[in-house]
Length: 76
Image 1 (cartoon, one colour):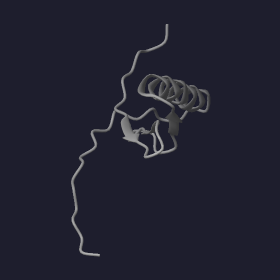
Image 2 (tube, one colour; image 1 turned 180 degrees about the vertical axis):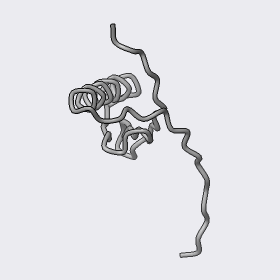
Image 3 (cartoon, helix red, strand yellow; image 1 turned 135 degrees about the horizontal axis):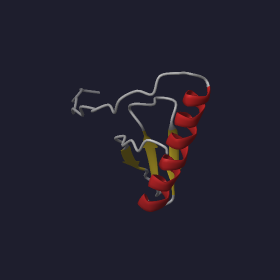
């Protein structure tokens, strides 16, 4: 039976609509969707693919990452 794991995702709204999704635990996962539901579904599919690849190749499955978001102001 597969182990259930949870991973933090970051949804970035795009100016033209939709979302880009980043997964801090898996920097190689960047996906998108036209709305939040499809973006999350695409993220789930991408995470599953990466986990399956890592398991098949004996690679480590990282723990969830807890990103810290800060705002930086610059004069430009």
